[in-house]
Image (cartoon, rainbow, N blue to C red):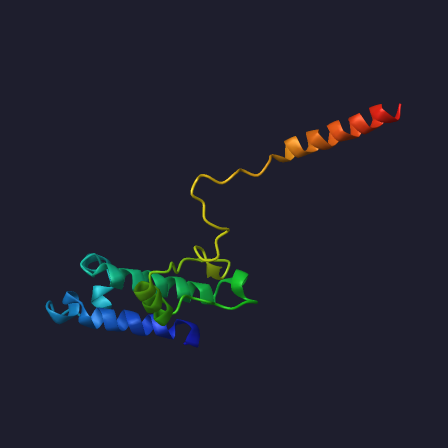
Length: 132
């Protein structure tokens, strides 16, 4: 298997080994991933299962053939949980990092483009009227 999904696969395997489905009920990890028992898994294991499936799907996705499959690594998830920063990606960058600035509701809104065009027209009309 290519190296892009190894970390998520290892994290899923670790989560499954520590879950009650395997430890207490003595089911195999493969059985725990199938429909009757998948609902008994902890939320984190279900998220790893979903992420691993998305990663595997991304390996054959033709839209990603140039940039390659770029899943969120497990270490990155752990770092963001500890630091509190968002890890949701948008175009390869964090969706919540690098904002425009503080928006507390007291900032002046940018002027509408129509108003700017009207102002230019009025200035041109006034300049033309002054020339006559």
